[in-house]
Length: 178
Image (cartoon, rainbow, N blue to C red; front, side, top):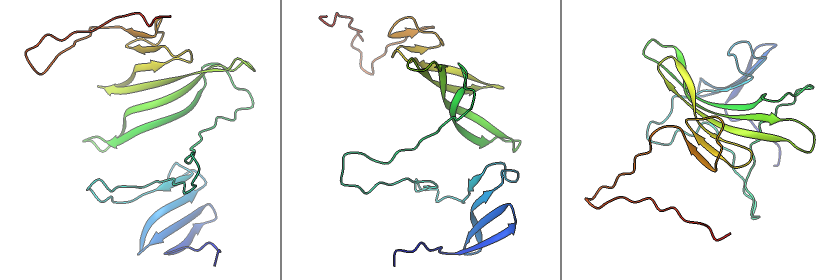
């Protein structure tokens, strides 16, 4: 039959939660957002051998396009520099505190109709703070160590080119013919 089915069991622990259990273990919780603090919380112990797929979107179309994951910021009053979405890579530290070790953020830099712009920002943690390490601007410029690259690649800091053999490592700069 084409009817959806639930394998395992479903319980409603309150009017604000739907909990899906498999073999007596909670696997999915859809909640009002108070406990846990996410509207959809998927939890598992993991396989530990590289097969820890907790979330998977699979398209089976024979066409050229795969599935899409869309993060949408639907503010009634969008503003320049609003964050559209934030992918955070969190783990527990040795004191059992949830810590963001790295993130990828999408930021709207211009919300004006027909001239919209956005940047992609990569951050990593060093000590107490998560700080920006790389930015891709809406015009294609990439900044490493700077949030405002002036050229196609702007690096603030030292660049080191090495080779594993004893030959001299070279960086070639040439015109593109245009």
